[in-house]
Image (tube, rainbow, N blue to C red; front, side, top):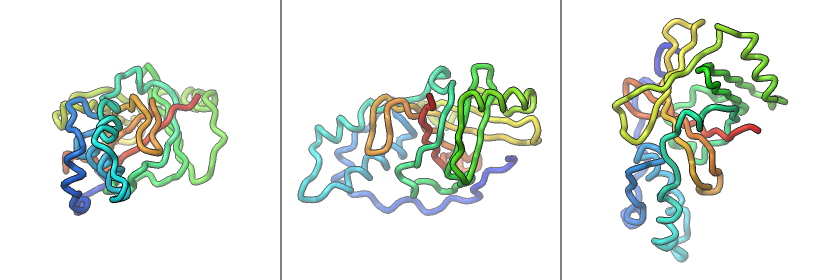
Length: 208
């Protein structure tokens, strides 16, 4: 798409509890931009009963070294969309289809499939669709973006759509986190160029 789906910034999340924030470590090598990790960690913290607070040690263990910027070899492969654990963090949802599948190939080719109904997807079927499209496939490449030192970015373009330009931060989880996220999951954060920030998060799990 030629333009970002979000034209203006919506109000931020409600004020977080100060005592809970004090238990969230500030990391240099973050899984996501700092504000995202804080929101995830504090959300888990504030959901704990006031009569049964998590210990400082337990909270630190759940947030430190959870993940970091993805490497090219981390992204290559086949993926399916997993429900993002904090939907309220998405300022927009340009791709609302519940069933989404993706493939990132070593040659820079990108394939995606969106459906409102469950699809009997296979890796071979995705490869066949890629081969049929040939030079019409979208492509991706890694880029430098001065938005953050802790996130790496890719740019997705489509030769069939003039001006098509998507920029995504790409991060990987090193460990299981919260109830939903598993080791090896990828988070793609859609970067709004006007706001210079992420406005939508896509959680992906590898297809085998």
